[in-house]
Image (cartoon, rainbow, N blue to C red; front, side, top):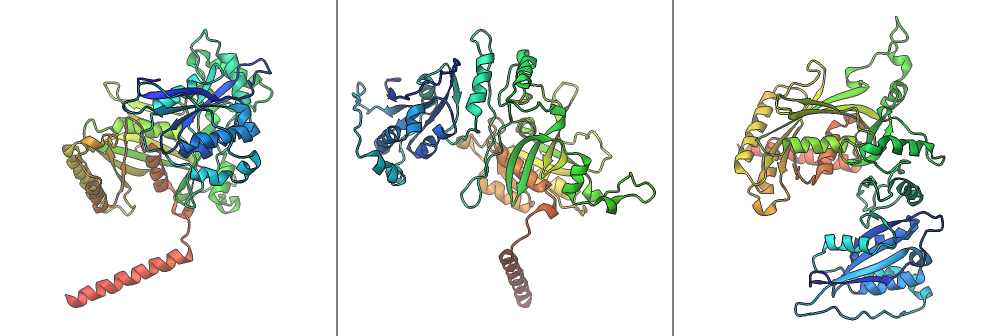
Length: 504
């Protein structure tokens, strides 16, 4: 029993294997969820070669999940060999103690269950009660059958052979005497229009991190392992993103492309760009420069989260691990930070790859002078306000108007973003979403709602920025159906204008 509110049943279904044949302590995969995550939970044994501890939350409506997972444990050898199941349910208002547990009997032979497995899964209802996420995470950890725990979400997919690799690293580094922790990075998959998700790129050879005290030792351990790939210096790797048809694909860290690779990506032939008087010098159009420099300016009233959002964007663009720590436990380089007289960071510069091209992004607060003020750069503007503050919203609209008027005669299209901060404080919201969207439409800018403190919608913000950075030639050409519809809209708009002129 937990807090006289929840009943917890540990080891309702137990795994048959311990995974200690090699003399090493295994890592238990701690997963928790409800009946609507059963589809993901049943796949876990096939991409994790080690013990799995599952915490399952049940209520009156989703109690069929227990019967389904019991049949799964009975009929699927891989599931029975690795998975231990615990479940939690909420007590009734007048209930004094937890009920006695009755082990469910097999309802049919395994052949029939496996034949109709998908149909049985559809019959399991979703829960109606609030999900106690912290309790379920602790139940999965407490019920694990080993000393090492890896806590993951149900929808995370592990790379092939990952359990064996991280098991060796964990047994080397974690001995209970020193405060070492292994943190595993994850690559987010992107949903596609057809409901599927993009396949994840392969996991790099060292998915773990070490504390600064043991960074050098950890890197040496990785390099001396015959099964691991050669260590690539951080200075030659950049965070890479691909943007296709409006969808972003995170490709992790990749080797910095050479000039030859950039020429092939840009579609430039060497013969066409050679200088006649000096064949070793190549000529490039200003629109086809090998490395693009982009300045992102963030405006807003005081305490509206400008610096927090800048840190979030910078961290998302450079690292898949905790801030300022690289995948190999080496402090990140390639970061340029400026500070004012009080030591407050207000400028961040980073380099990443977009569709194979190198891009330098410089994030500035307000009207700070960039590092190379006379360099040809692309400028983007973010205007922020607090969703619980009317004065900050009024100030944001004034900034939008000033930026628009200042760039009125600029032939380059203005790239503006209106971002509302503190979307996590819905009860304190003063500025409605519709009101902010109306202002965004007036100034023809993108609109987003984020929580700079909690990092909510940071990925959406980053995706929107990358879409604006994408070259027009890289964008997908509309299909003939889309072109036909757009042409029809243009004809209808022209006819409407003619009609209004006739009435006038």
